[in-house]
Length: 149
Image (cartoon, rainbow, N blue to C red; front, top):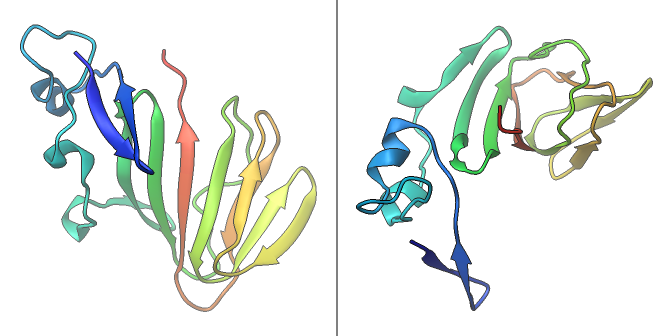
């Protein structure tokens, strides 16, 4: 089964495999590997009731790994002078978009402090990290695609 979505005035057919129980409920009858997109599973409004706490603050998954073939959208909120983890590298590339605060972006040995409305790109297998260097919470979006295991 396919689903039509309207994107910038163009109808697009979408086929996306899924794997979690909530997503399985959204499948059409007899459909094992496709999802039927509805307002209920395509809309996600932020709620503090659904945050995941981290050592440096919290995160909120707007799109998890199971909905859109591994593509994700996450909000990270980091307390002042903290980082969610040390600089690291992984096989997936990653985008960040700073909403609030002052972020020190580390990429392959270089550092730069940026503020709101800055986008950051981390290529695959390149060491990178983000740290809140401000006096208030920092908020940024993370866009990443996880490979299937």
